[in-house]
Image (cartoon, rainbow, N blue to C red):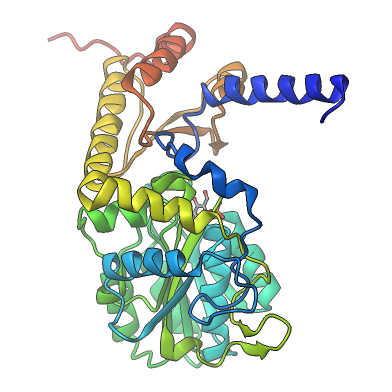
Length: 380
Ligand SMILES: Cc1ncc(COP(=O)(O)O)c(C=O)c1O
């Protein structure tokens, strides 16, 4: 039992968290989940320590459900039959670290190429792995500048190429085009290459809707990472990483203490988050997930239209859930939890956020800002 003071402290925190959840339109987190049926599992210390495909002496785990989640994503991303492996991670950052780890084991002297719009964690991952790397310029929409990529690879043609492709950049949800990247590699006759796709937010819905350009294993990626708490939705951060199995086989030792193989980045792994993902997949099904994806894209178009009506210079990459617009006043950024970079903020139209919620923000924005952005009225 908590003491009165501690109970008051906890209640105050819970109230604050609920309030902040009401103004949460700037990060790519789905808000329509209800996992209350799973609450009894919170009594259990579930832990998927080690390899998801190899049973462990730590039998209080959710490996069997994790396997089903992995099978779902392997199908969705057209992973090569009988030649894929993966696990449920703590999030997209860990999945990217794993993909780069596999790439570095394959090509220890490889150079990692990634665009300047890449998520900040990738640079840290590269430092941890002690890899050589080159940052590639971005285009105005956030997509990689393929000319710059060509030039940089050309200057380092003696080294294997490791590409970190963004399938949805953090700020503008720009998607790097694997076809363009592969053309570049072919035109420079690069034989040793590896492509990892950081598909944190956009990967799941883009694959569900078969959006082009494609980016999955069929389109030439060697590994791919998504975040589970973004499009699928989860109260605990999580993700999935998938790699071609033959690449990863050089990683991982058998550890007698856990009675399984240590093939993942962390030791203990969350046993609850795979069950959240499993539950979402089973309750929504592919059709339900597709419907959420389409609704979210439509909401983004609606929000973009509202900004345009106000004369605000907002924009959106094709089929994206992210609407980019000139950064608002600090009070709005704080209230609505809006990330800002280079003078631009974004709204992310995630499942579970209603149009009414965006309307509420847009009215406040209009009150404070619209006159600054009004286009001159054209007279003939
Ligand atoms: C493009 C991209 N990659 C990676 C990440 C990191 O994902 P996570 O927060 O799941 O570690 C993010 C997070 O916003 C992201 O936008």
